Amino acid sequence: MTAVVHGVDMAAIGRMVRQRHEQTAAQLRGLREQSAAVIASPERGSGDAADAGTLALESAEQSLVTAALQEQLERLQVALVRLENGTLGICERCQEQVPLPRLEVMPWAAHCVPCQSVLDRR
Ligand SMILES: [Zn+2]
Image 1 (cartoon, helix red, strand yellow):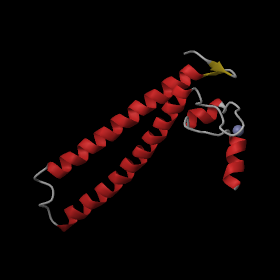
Image 2 (image 1 turned 90 degrees about the vertical axis):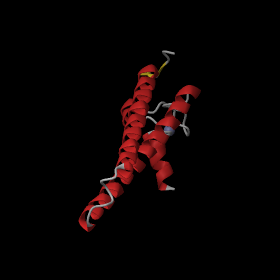
Image 3 (image 1 turned 180 degrees about the horizontal axis):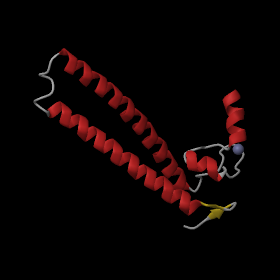
Image 4 (image 1 turned 180 degrees about the vertical axis):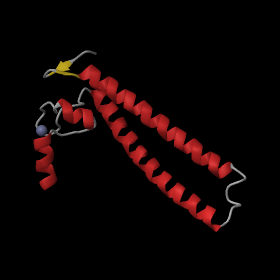
């Protein structure tokens, strides 16, 4: 489990992905519990129009955050699958090691930077 590919410690990357996955899942759970509490609260919803507007704005912002977290979580899940398959950090196009700084920013990256820019240009 301590495979070092091209000097990149995949065990460390794996730990980072698991940790981020847990954090993101916890954040998402927290947000969902919060919005469930707002909906369940008898004080909310009986306010005036301004309150209703604020509430709508809050929930719109919250759903944006929730959507972003959900997307992040799905990407991290992909990274976890790739980790288990042993393909995490390996470019799908050229089979080269994706550089560590790129993996730290986006561990789910399926391509190295040169390949990604070629793919983006298509
Ligand atoms: Zn590549």
